[in-house]
Amino acid sequence: MANILSKVKEILKILLFTAGFSSYAQQVKVSGKVTDTLQNPLAYANILALPEDDSQDVLFVIIEIIVFN
Image 1 (cartoon, rainbow, N blue to C red):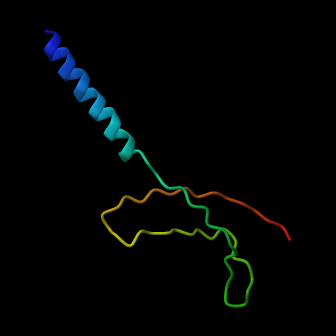
Image 2: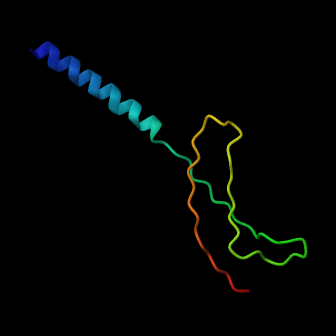
């Protein structure tokens, strides 16, 4: 019984250790100004950065920031 318990504990340790790798995510801040051809700011423009590799999942958030200059 103790042998089975130690194996279960070892498997749980390995699973918890490897679960941390899959939950790692990169956060990148993109900033700038989106303008039209006349250099006028575009209201409510959405920017989406896509990975070059199609096998990756894409998660994004749209945040509305209004800046008055």
